Every structure is written in structure tokens, then in C-alpha cells.
Length: 279
Image (cartoon, rainbow, N blue to C red; front, side, top):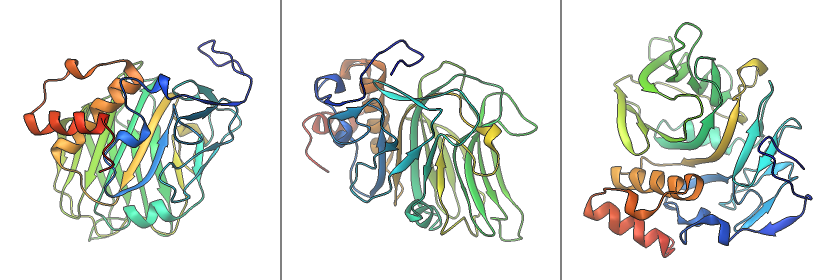
């Protein structure tokens, strides 16, 4: 298959241990509380990549595999989409069961092709509620990150958090969203960039999820390269968020450990993840 980057493969599964970079692979991320993990390098299994795969394997073993749209192509380190639709659909309701608890961490690493178009990084639509993380909204198109929860507030109105966090076209970044019933935070590349004190009453439960799209509006598909998506059933610590973002940059952008100025605790955690201690 030839992707937009010109890479050619023949649709076979091959090992990618050497390509993961600096001793890190998909198991290097913080593991405690990890419910679903989708990786662009290891898209069908640990240290395995299939350029023609029709699924995006959930590497946790929890079975939340995603179905890949026929318009999507695989690069060596990510999933490339440039058309309307639903890039990756997770039929399992396990992801919405986590987000409905209103206490979770969601992380994704990607490179958007567009900055001012409204598109969805992740979305869920259930009855009667919805939850999504968007790039822009219908009225604000600056490249901001938006958190939205339909009829999620105690008074029955929507949770609508247009953060000041800007995600530019052709920019690599890891975005982390931490949610509790009282507080929602947005992090970019391991740095806290936005916060809101909305009180979330309810989020979607028992519904499928879409990575890089929105179920009812194909026009809101994400255009660009999606490198990774992770969901935790707890709120990660600041050090854990910093370390996961650093691992993304090392694996998907070619950074090295020496590029990061981290706290002593975070650096120890990062180096332990390189050694794969399984925490």
C-alpha cells in the first residue's frame, strides 16, 4: 500500500521493535488504570505493524478493538485520514463505561492537517448524552481544543469548554484531558494549559466510540495523522502525564530523553519506563 507519505508496504505483518525508538514501545506508557491503548507503530500487536490492517488493535488485551474506515491509510507510525467519515469506530461500549464514571484520563498524539476546521479527535453519542473532544466548534475556529458533553450539566444544559489551548496545523502534539465531576483539565505536551470547574452530572454510557470522528456527522472527521490514543479509568498524576507525553515525542517525533527538562521524579519514571518495568 502506498500512503500519502510515499511509504510502500505489501500488507504483511512485520516486527517493529527497532522502529519504536530508544528502547520504548507501546508498553512503556504508564500501565496502571489503562483501559484501552491504540498505537500507530504497533497497530496490531506489541512490536507488530500491519500496513493493511482493517482494525486498530487495543493493546491492553481488553478487546476494545477499533474498526478502520476504508478511506484510512497506515503510515509506519500512524493512521492517516484525509476524507469525511468515521476513521476508527470502537463498537465495544467499554470506553463509554469508563468516561461515564466522570473520572478518567484521555490522551492522544496526532498531527492535524487543518487548524480552523471543526473536527473531532474523539466522540461518543449515547442516549440521551454525548461526550467529545473537538478541534474548534461551530462558532470558534482558532484551533482550540473543545470539551463537550450534551445535557451533561446538573440543570440539563451542555458542558461546553472552549479551552484556550491551540493545536496548529501540521503540529505534532500530545493532548491529555483529565476529568472529574468537578474539574476538567487540558494538557498539551505535558504542560497544563487550561482548566474549568464545570460540574458534570452525566456522560454518555453504553455507546460506541469514534476515534478521529463523530458518529452522526461524517464531515467532522479528523484530517491528518493519528499516532496514538489511550484511555485510563483514573486521573493520572502530573508526572505520569509528563512522562507519557515524552514517550510519545520520543517514539513519534524522534526526540530523545536528553531533550526534556523534567523533575527528578518524572525523569526517574521516564527512565524506568524505558526499562519496561510494567507499572
